[in-house]
Image 1 (tube, one colour):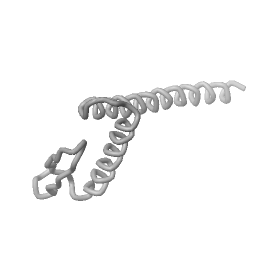
Image 2 (cartoon, helix red, strand yellow; image 1 turned 30 degrees about the vertical axis):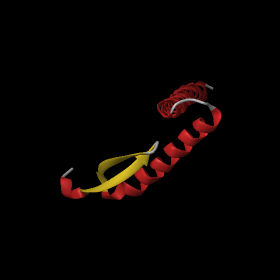
Image 3 (tube, rainbow, N blue to C red; image 1 turned 60 degrees about the horizontal axis):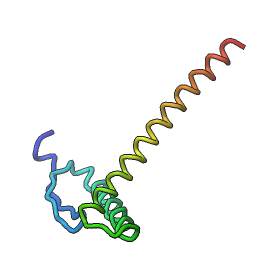
Image 4 (cartoon, rainbow, N blue to C red; image 1 turned 180 degrees about the horizontal axis):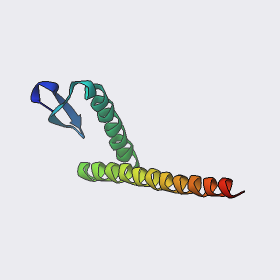
Length: 91
């Protein structure tokens, strides 16, 4: 992807601003992700009396956990579908 296909944006996470170059057609998605991340950090702030880096770490842990849980569920569903197809083929 060439640099002319990218747009420069700034996002703020946990009170710090980060410059990014993103594909023009993904700018809105990145802004939505920024909001989601900051909402999760705020949630951690309300739940735990920790330092800011700890709030960010807890938010990261929550996101990775949910991602892995969803990935594992997808794997299980795929295997169930394969078993179901085998049963259908042999009945």
